[in-house]
Length: 211
Image 1 (cartoon, one colour):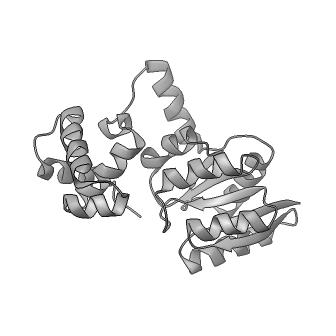
Image 2 (cartoon, helix red, strand yellow; image 1 turned 135 degrees about the vertical axis):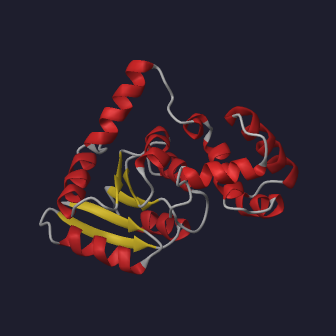
């Protein structure tokens, strides 16, 4: 029996995932969490084989939560379930230790298949994403400019691109305003942009704010 924990801050999404998973006789839901804090509390209290982890959850940033999961609960497999397009988070998720990445527009059958595959120690990404990753490795290209950024740079990019002020980004990411300003300068240089307005246009044009 595969024991699954569902971590998503939307009750309706959790209920939908629970129903899908519960219909499979070989999978059981060990518990649910609506935040990173609740998830770690759950993992400390009940045995879990696979965590279904949403990208947009309250608590620490998504990548920090994922890295902490792999560090503290190394035996637990993580399948990221997200509304974000694969080109935003799939590669970063896998690099941070996730066993798979599945967007929420996939079918219930694909979700069950993904859970079973990662529970066995395998990896799961969509066929289109697998082909894209293979193409990137063959060509040696990194893809779009935002895909070359570090995890923290990407978080700052999305925050600034949403129109937030430096001080608000600093508060959200637990950084100093000076550090955020340094990141902003670095982002402009690395991405060949000239102003914060350019950052906003880039983020919007690449649909990086979808939650």
